[in-house]
Image (cartoon, rainbow, N blue to C red; front, side, top):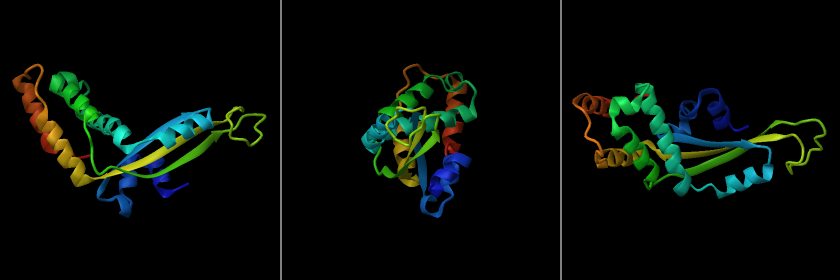
Length: 172
């Protein structure tokens, strides 16, 4: 098992980002699991940083909001949903697919060692992507600043948005 995957399984993306090679990058791992090795392998082969990374970025941005507020749409108003949507629709540049790996999770009775999915085996596939921290931050800033409020936020929501913006990358 590659070191990045061991660190990811133990500590999440933060663990992988401690590796010297990734210290100046944000790490995103896409994972998928199931009983059909062929279907999962097809998913991994079809993975495209250009097409699939925006969803990974939006999910991590969303988690950051939830780390600050248990009900982000109340705390930040429509800005929360608008930012997640814009992040998911954005074209992110300088994203690199670094590696992938799969694990045979379990093998049921009658496993004949084949990988055709006809036994009780299940697999978990992982795809490691990275983006330089400075590139992610500049692209995120552009998205953040481009949000036009569908519903004007309250004064409290504007303050919360401003506070979060000032410390967004702490613990990201």
